Image 1: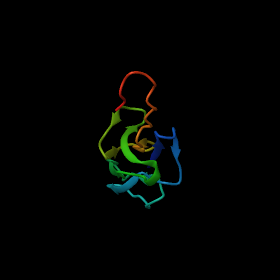
Image 2: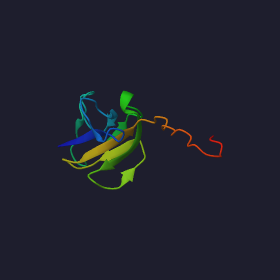
Image 3: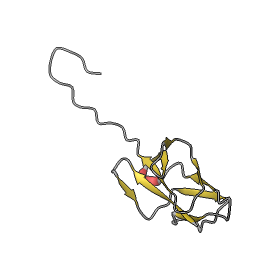
Image 4: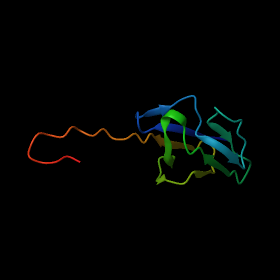
Amino acid sequence: MTATVFAFSLTSDKPIVDITPIESVTGGTWTGAPSTTLTLPAAPGTATVDLLSALGEYGSFVEWQLDGGALEKSHELTLTAPGEFAIAFYQTHEKPITPPCPPGPHTCT
């Protein structure tokens, strides 16, 4: 009875491998980083996962999605069924590149 939590980089538009977005698990068994899989307890089988607020170079937590459902902003998710998977989305908050001021009779700020 396992469930999985993956990490995905919105900045580079690809899965983040070899790093777990899981900070801690309550009500289930998790072997710790870098594992992305946890074992759910026997019935009722509910485990609560706290997600890391940041993943180093991959940036800050943005939201998560459980089995293709709605996007959620909370750092906490609840897994209740074997085979469930969640994706935690992370993004860097790099300063946008400012285009050069175009020529003309105006003032760029």
